[in-house]
Length: 371
Ligand SMILES: Nc1ncnc2c1ncn2[C@@H]1O[C@H](COP(=O)(O)OP(=O)(O)O)[C@@H](O)[C@H]1O
Ligand SMILES: [Mg+2]
Image (cartoon, rainbow, N blue to C red):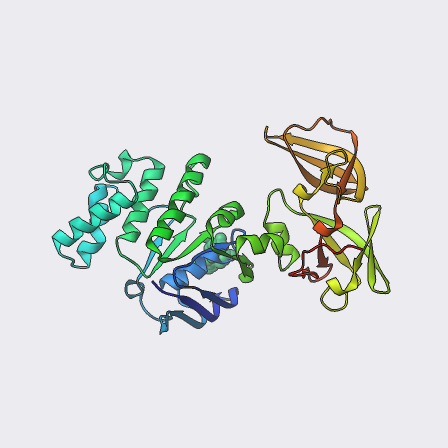
């Protein structure tokens, strides 16, 4: 087990800076997820930790050891790829035994570790099959087992579930997190899927354009996003961003937003407020007037422009004076396209973002105090 530190790490490919100045501390035994849109530098960061890429500048530590220039084979980091990369002509047993054999481990030791790790990931009955005779999920398990048999200090997984169908993905998510808890190995898991990140990570590092926007627990990311970018990335459907104007009235700041007006105590905000703000409102914090919690006193009206029902949930897109608002309701909603509807929300559920920088202006204080 080990902690990992990225210290002022930069990565350039030719003229292109992919990672500008990454600083990140990963705790011993932690399951951390790197999440962010495709192309934001997650794989590159993971490959630098594995030793498959060298930082252009900066240092990487595993515990107190500077591994920046240590070759991959001597890092004790095991990596699982999206493509599994199994040897097709070898049985599962041989696939698992291959690494230890190359490292010169004794045959009896290898047989014992293969049995142990196969049992752990539920492959014990499939050891004599070849990859072609396995399902996608089973192949993924072989890839995991092959990485685990190395007893690595750090376990690196790069979108390991993206080739699996949705239901298997959900099952494997749970299996991987359980396995990680059992083994306690420091794990870095890369995904572009925020649901995967939220359900699996002890902590999540949100990447965008090579930068880490925020590192926090799933609950912190959801309730206290550092910025509009994090707020809109985490949560499904996406957080709505509403235009607003503001006016100072003594100790109160008055906001006007889509025809509704409310005051918030000025002390709620860190520092002075910018000229331009945007408000964030999550789709599940919007209600129909008739079944809204009594604390909801802000009302907006609009036209229904799209309805999507999954059975357990209904997503309704409402056009409020040109702003499209995503809302989410339990079960089937008795509404139709073109209906005029009233939506209500509680101003305490809003997020306040700087309209230019996107910084969350009320960070760490999502407690009620609308006046
Ligand atoms: N070897 C390389 N040479 C040049 N550009 C690369 C190389 N590897 C990755 N990149 C670029 O770096 C950026 C980040 O890629 P990557 O780390 O794979 O992102 P992610 O895993 O988040 O999708 C992309 O724009 C990609 O095209
Ligand atoms: Mg990638």
